[in-house]
Length: 390
Image 1 (cartoon, one colour):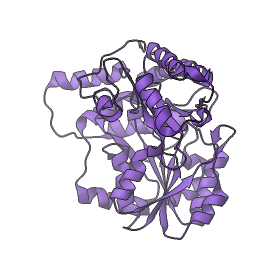
Image 2: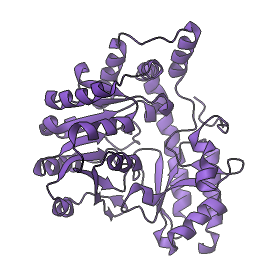
Image 3: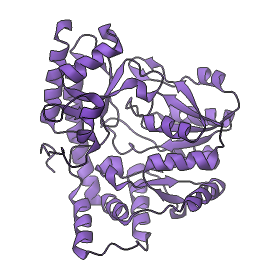
């Protein structure tokens, strides 16, 4: 597990590196890509071994008997999260953006409102709008440097046309690990407004020491009849290209609605993703994950200390994920100016805050899941780009 190894991803059809110049004007020749949420690390050896076994066999037919795959999911959720999952509640989708789209189709109708707590992962709003539903943005205020939930304000926003709420837990882009109290608040809010809760927990394994993530079924078991869980191996083990995710639905009625939509679209998983996920959810995968989180914790420390040393910049304390959320409002600059300094001055491609919705106007998101030397270099470049403030 050599996370310091710098792997050249340019020219490999990597959207993170091969699309950065087109989108951000940052050349991969001398720029640093810190936008797309995948890691510049190899996955666990057990995942690579599973793929090598497939290649050695050389026949890529239809996958059958998913019992080992389902058992691996059950083992991981029980071992890592204390959550007992019924194998019959698990649906496998082509990643969780696909899972989100299927939930929108299954549990809402055109014109219905879908609630997002913004700023939040940008694909949610894209999928909701594309399906002809209304994006309802409930903004997360920042209090003492952390996003907090403002249920009183959100209650006042509801019109009765809302049918679903998508929760991002842990939160992306802020990196919050929601407390049990906060999660129960979400559950009560959903009950008050009769909302299906889709809890996207794709980052729930990427939690730093001292933090405790609680899966929604354990935080609020009383909403099992309106809860849909979304989990995946893809973020945890850096296998996003496998496009595999799980939608886990405890309630039989909601399961039937979701199954009908999946059946109508003819969706079934690809064998590569099934083999990779089964291998990842294992003791070997868990050992790799522990090493990863220790490495990322030090990357986080270096990045935060460096960024916070620049007057006017403030990195939100990361409790989970490898996505640093940096506030530039203290610089007094407008968005165009601080973004240009990052892209043209520091030559760093980072996600633009407004893409995450209301509340992201003065922010950029930086991916720190890259070899440490790049994180150190990125910090040095940011300090130089804003040297006139120091």
